[in-house]
Length: 358
Ligand code: TLP
Image 1 (cartoon, helix red, strand yellow):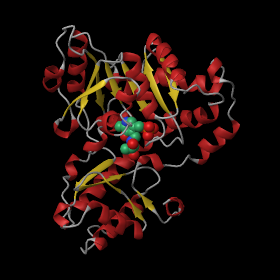
Image 2 (cartoon, protein in one colour):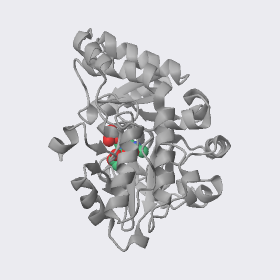
Image 3 (cartoon, helix red, strand yellow):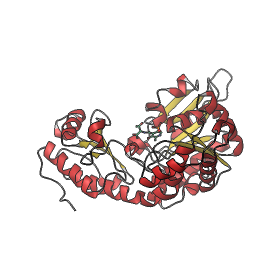
């Protein structure tokens, strides 16, 4: 796949993780001032962490090689082995992180499906275990915003705030998987600091829509981040001259949020075009960020079969479920690329192109 994915004629909609570092990021990486981060002596990494904490209005931040490791570190820092973590039934931590919640943190995920992936306190409260010594205890609640496998859906800020308030009243911390919290911020017109202020810890990714080659961050209180640093080292995540990565991360943090609205506009345009192709079911109004998940059961073809046929036309995307396909927009795919993808889907499904190139 990689040779094809490298060609400029390929429209790669598999994920926003495929974005390449910009020329400015590459320059900054080459010139980065570095030191040994296990001694906390990498000046560029320290700058990134300080800046991330500032942007989120928190005391401290910590850099990670991946979002999965940052989520696991947060879970392991908050929750002892033998306790439970409440999350939505299609949460990334539950479906796509190698069962690390159980395998490494020693916790049991306690899941509940939620409409559009958006939990409410009413859905969460019945999952909290009674405080009886012979019952496993609830240790943490985890939310995901935007919600990946529900198509980039968003928490109404009041719903997330109520969950945090009620959880705190019940003595429980709340961790946010905010891999794409900047997409949420742009779509909702609220700052990331405002959207996340009630969470006890927040993970966000530099390496998705923000375009950095590597990196995710945890933000929280100084005490939490100090403990998370210990957990990260325990997981083998102590890094040395990570400033070469942080240099790209700093640019991602400052510059990339400004252009995310284009990815959202492209996603809506793509959804509107797909909705006109017979056999595809998607409601474009529900596409509010950069992820589309659409049902292809009406085509009589499997998602894998459609994705394979699209790959032959240089359009890359992936099955999301037995009946669905996921496409993700990002800055390496422009409007012309989106229109090429639409034409390819129409041709693979034997329909007329749903959208003229703009
Ligand atoms: N998501 C990837 C795949 O793993 C599905 C993608 O292509 O979307 N939280 C959320 C909500 C994510 O979507 C992801 C990655 C992660 C955490 C993990 O980040 P990484 O890949 O850096 O470990």
